[in-house]
Length: 336
Image 1 (tube, rainbow, N blue to C red):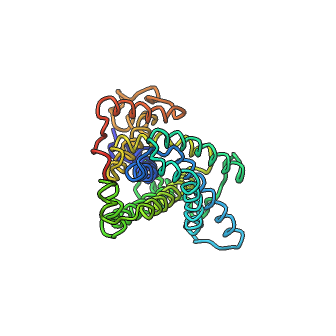
Image 2: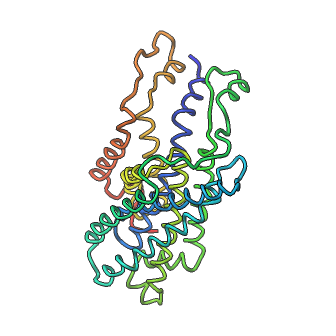
């Protein structure tokens, strides 16, 4: 029995990856929940908005790398994030002007907007794959590890090493800064308060002089920023492949609904619930239990509840359970 080695193994394979993945899901879920709370529909094109913004950032990163510009130990993609946000903003604002505004003026039911967003999802997906291709694209550079397993072993003398990738640490830090800025904007600025008022009561907000088109525009800009940042962080942590972002739609929606759709705090909490559930259920617990239990009780098998190939099934099961037993989510939704 070796408690310290067990804890390090748990941190290495569950806690650190789940924190990074949860941060990415939280940023994605925040975008979904903002659109639901303010524009009042579920945007199925959000995953492919992430892919588009990330693609713009990848292309800009390649350009910077070709020009010899880098951030040293940090990924050059951090410099390219503003380009990705600008690209995503142009796309979503153009889509709103050409498509969504027409349905808003017709006062279409939310279900119609959901179906429209599905069509837009396929258009975004096709455009992204047409421009950059369907395969994995590598754009990460800089130092790979903040803490290497070998260095950790030499420092601590433990049998188990702890490896923390630079991108994992960056993901958590960038997500914290982004969320702090978002909450400051929503609670401290006049535009943010207008968005909250519009979300609470659209008619009353209009009577008080709030410009609805300005609220819609700012909402799309924030969503473009959140989607691009989440997408770039996910691409740096894993890899960039357009279809992967389409698959991310399920855990992102699960995170938003588990937390309480329309509630930013709920979206963040839901992101971590989904991430820790996916990683925990698909992790092979043999190494942890071998350290943690007496030698006579060490397991022979992998003690893996589900293959990693089916990790998205975890999100689906959690989503169904929440919808059946607590449809408002952990936090009550529909407010910002």
